Length: 364
Ligand SMILES: *Cc1c(COP(=O)(O)O)cnc(C)c1O
Image (tube, rainbow, N blue to C red):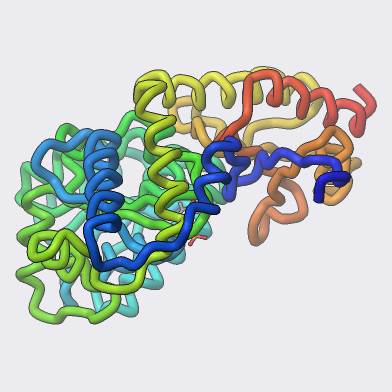
């Protein structure tokens, strides 16, 4: 390993870790019953609550990737037959739609693809119909680098109608300004290998008091995906219901400390500035952001159409030459789009450096 050239990750996740975060993985394993574990868990819970900006909410901490957070949110917040209005912008949105369909929800979907955003007025008008129990959205659709910044205003309208609001914020949380207590989102799913800059393996769902009541009142409860079980284990014995990845929790704990020490506003601003460098400089070397609506360009994952004469493989190889891993486009965009993440232990000069590396490939 030592003599390999270190490659920094500018992917859509996982992310490059600070040394102290990866070193935390090597802490001795502890059993998950007992005071040491209790203090680790309660420390993480307190930090997650700060990061989610909630006083009385609860953040369920689970071992698994972001998809676990999203699916457990869906299965714990929705009952079969429930009427959902859903806004979908691509591949990750499709996955949450699958989860909701499998749950048996009746979902009406407004979707756009290839970086176009669903019009706020369209969703707002449909909300007025009063036909729905829940509004569901992905805040940041990672496949196209689209941050749906109308989500909060739409959520406020949904709350006025007495609806619940559930949000996949896996790639958005801690990279966009999202507060559990002030956003009108009832449940927010995220995970460790995105903006908090921890290793993959832990996922979390923030729940406000309404969502807490909801996870206990659904008629049909799942087993492993039941967020109510996490709340009960926390309340009864300051524990978790299944064997957790303790070492990953140590690393998450450290990453949360680093983030909170920086300050949440600062942390988010760092993502915005790194993305801003890419949005400004990539067009100069022939790469256009696929999200045309500047309101909706993500801070954490950027996506660009590549110059016609290049293939994504060539572009990714050029980034690699410069010392970076970037992500290909997904699905029908895989032949024409590349994505560059701004998450993890990376700097503004890394952003400039990756642009330089790509300009070599495009000969500009
Ligand atoms: C990363 C991501 C997920 C979860 O992916 P995992 O591979 O399961 O961690 C879900 N939704 C969005 C929007 C994401 O960016």
